[in-house]
Length: 298
Image 1 (tube, rainbow, N blue to C red):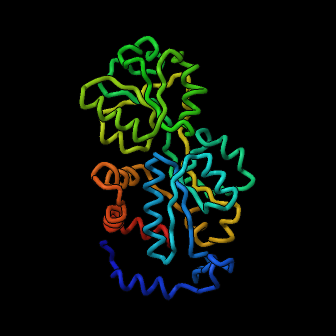
Image 2: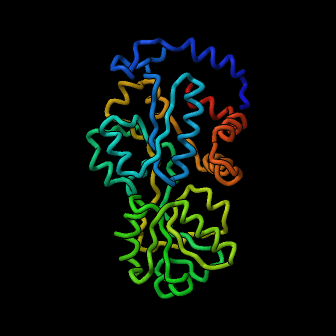
Image 3: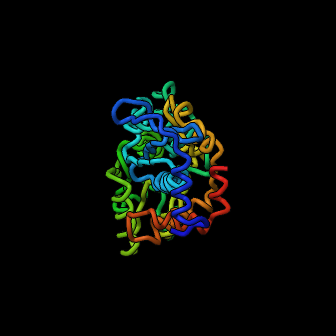
């Protein structure tokens, strides 16, 4: 772990920052940091959404250094928002608005808190191999056989699946294609296999995503706007988050990360790394981007 301050000094600083108010495990008050935040924080991450994984792992490393005890839980969107509303989770960093996760925000909006957008370059896409013989979604139905009559999707509970099912498929007459939904890793496996075989493939995808650097891809044009326009990636906290974690709520409200920085972190974690142990990779990225990281908690 490469840091400008020794691990021992950081541990000492973190320890000295703690004020023990009790023990939540036995029903007492939660342990609290000197900055007024509860020490424990649980970040919920959508399965398969790598920008959320990257941002959450970054914040886990940053907050651990600050003395927090951070847990990352993976789940599909529905249980994440339900968990936020019931205070089972403290925060999630991957809510796409105004389109992708609008249904969940509408359903749980009274019990969750929007902490603001940290990236505004997000968009949903239907992507194909860069040398595919079509350039627009309105060409896909007539050329479905060139893609094996398939559109490869991700998790059934994702906002991208909802938009694809409710908007893209009926708008562009894609009902005759076999629309496969399983998981993001399964979609990426199909994409990898097709790329190696030199075959055409159409997948549901989103930007920012490291796949755009790892594979020769192009987005199909969306002349009818079925996928919606650019979106913001928001952090959302539980209803009590600003009370239980006032300092962290302020940090996340001020958090911004442009797509260039996000791509570099995603590439380091998912494209250049063969392990799912992201800790060392994230720590190296933090060391290489210390000027930026230092602003997150300033």
